Image (cartoon, rainbow, N blue to C red; front, side, top):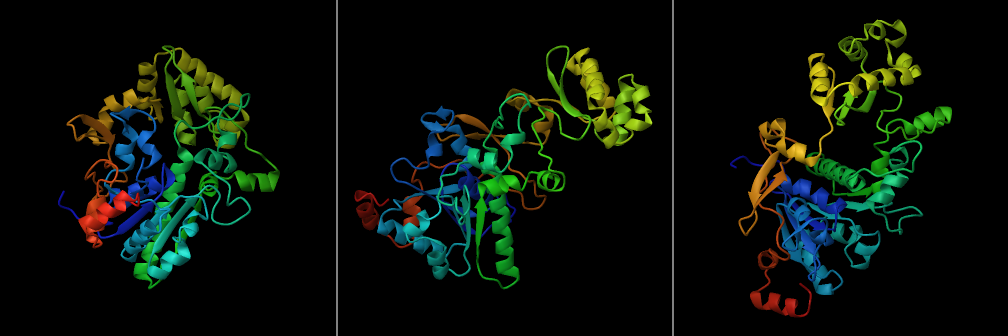
Length: 398
């Protein structure tokens, strides 16, 4: 790739494990930032062993750590802490997701690092934030999703709350971390500002996505409940089962789309009913509308349902599993699935990089590195000789 990248020249130090911090740094790496990931010398980031493994390494790792350099440091040792301080001198961003207080215990908190580099931007991701009565509690994504309100509204009303099938809370927090870092960089570079830290609490990032639940409660005492596959208060938008036992999602909740759909399924009477012309009227007759659609979908196979709705320009689609994704023509046409090769030559398909920038797109330069793969390179650039590195290695510093 010959284009420059939007974050080319930005140096990021990643001090974190698992999902929120590493995903934040991954997005920066995908768009050209030099990301130095610091890992414990013995086993590295635990994500290296999460989910499905290939020859001992997580397949998730190859995505989460792509374009990153792996430097092993035992952060509990003073010599390792000094190496971090040296790296910070020339860094733009530090990303960390340890429990609040851990970085300070190692002499690597905000006050210490910003004194070394006043222009530094520090992204701090944690379960409950850097302040408040819960700051010292351990907090994973599941806790953030629960406290942020997402888990309560997920599932069916007659069953306990359920989780989304991926670590969505961590990913939402990571995205907020990236946004905060880029805004802080812009302020520093364009407005003559100093560096600053971004305090991202997982529960707050999730809460930020919760639409109008708070003002609805404040104004009316209304508590939004679980509504299964339907979109609460917006009709019709739901998932239905076809005659051949497939699932189809239909979003016909816009006024004009509702009319087109009713005509397409032979219910012109509902299309012309003035009481159903707008969403508030449809909400009042949710059960009736849902039954009409369920009966029609259940009487036809998926292919026929999608064909009828496509011709009527009604948003609809099969609910994809990953096998559907891998075989889909649109995914292929958009090059959203890219094939790479592991170091042993084994081909491996990974997701392409989003968002798509027309002039300075992101790219995958290399897959997740081996543990400590770049230690010698990074320490050599700091002036550590081979002999000094070997001495640090013998004492477990690196």
